[in-house]
Image 1 (tube, rainbow, N blue to C red):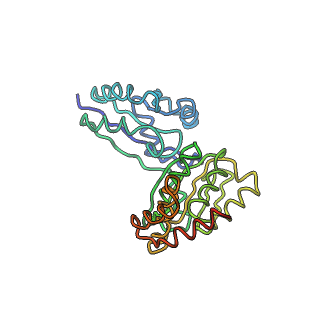
Image 2 (image 1 turned 60 degrees about the horizontal axis):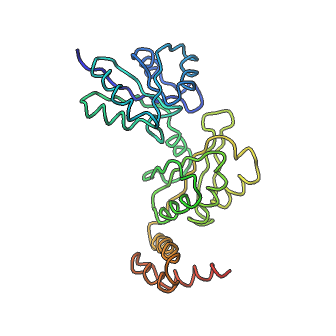
Image 3 (image 1 turned 90 degrees about the horizontal axis):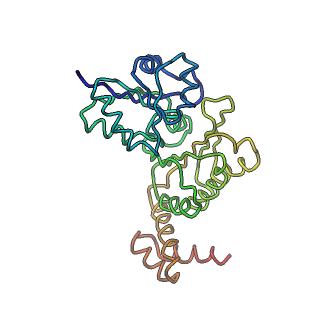
Length: 279
């Protein structure tokens, strides 16, 4: 008996009308659907009259379950993988299953559809020819700030996911890492009733969020324009490296080493940042 196919099926991120006809037909015809949250996916299936059995597959059981799913596929069953919303594997579990299926010679077929990151980028008005998807930032403040500092010199548009209870803190940390004047766009509740897309500088976005409680509710995509790919980016990288070294070295030594590493002007690093630290 030939092996089955593992279908990677995108589901709506809000508007149920965004489920494609091919996705719906596939979900009805596979032997089972692997879902991150069977209760949430069950509500979606019930809405569309899909009675296919659901199997829970999440970050805590994926390693063990992947082997059993591959066995079913090798035995001839075709299966689908869905996430809570959007395209599976984009900040969601599933890559271990896909890797195991491909290693076993099983066909893995994508059914494209909704993806919050791509939907947000399409309406942001920021450069989209080159971008980097960073997913969710760390929950711990120190780790989040360290990661943002590493991205300060990145020239590509940055795309982040964020939750309602951390959006204000994350915007503040982005201002500190990228500067108040860096252009950015905040997309909230895409395809849903209260969809909003705000643009401006990072300082302006934070002010809008702070002034309106509604702008701190829901699910967010934050997009930040990359650093200019010139001397400004080099200076931003130099300041990032200086900030890291200054935690362990005297300011003059940190500035000298940061300048050697990045090529940024030493005086701009030492003079500019030291004067700010004294304010």
